[in-house]
Image (cartoon, rainbow, N blue to C red; front, top):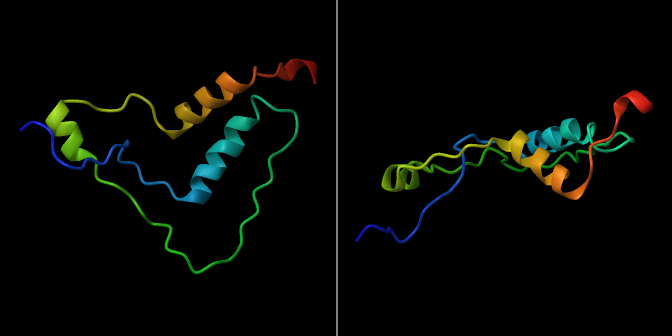
Length: 88
C-alpha cells in the first residue's frame, strides 16, 4: 500500500501567527496604498507549532516550490493588481 493513512503537507518551515502576519504586512506594501497595522494581544499561547512533512516528501518524491512569502504574493496578485509606487 503506497498511501499512508495520514500525511502532513507543508514546507517544513515553522512560522507562528505573528511571523505570518509580518509576511502579509510586508507583501501588502506592493498591493495597497495604506499601511497594515498588526495588533498583538498578550496571551499565554504556545505559538511554536509545526508539522513534519518528510513522510509525504519521501513517499511521493515531492518538495514544495513556494515559501510563505511567495504564497502570500500569489494570493495578493490573484485578488489585487500591484500598485505603481512611482505614482504616489
